[in-house]
Length: 147
Image 1 (cartoon, one colour):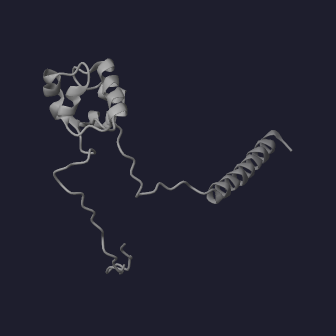
Image 2 (cartoon, helix red, strand yellow; image 1 turned 45 degrees about the vertical axis):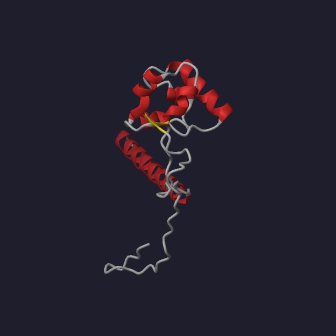
Image 3 (cartoon, helix red, strand yellow; image 1 turned 60 degrees about the vertical axis):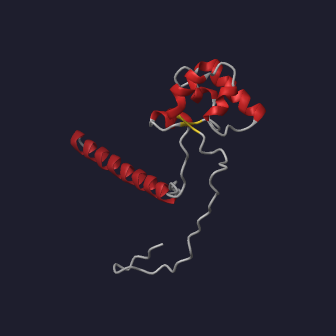
């Protein structure tokens, strides 16, 4: 065999090896279970993410790092808020923050629109639970079943 036939034989052998390896790789990938994200899993936003989105920081859930983002709070006051919450319990309203050392009326006014106490129990409104009645899942006109 000449040089040209050797190159052709090498190219053909290389092609066969690559096709075989590619087929084996595809079979391996087909057999592996692919992770499918659960469309019903919702990860709640952290307090830092809520702040970034312009949402109020939930004082009863926030870490000291998240509270430090508020104007005129700083790391010491933020830690004092968390320590007070740990010692005395949840805050009901912004006026409860006045009990934390270093926080006065001026600071309360600056942060009033940027904090939330929504997870604190409210005395004014009852908690309501809404249930969804069972429904029959019938296919629509395309034949696809709806949940």
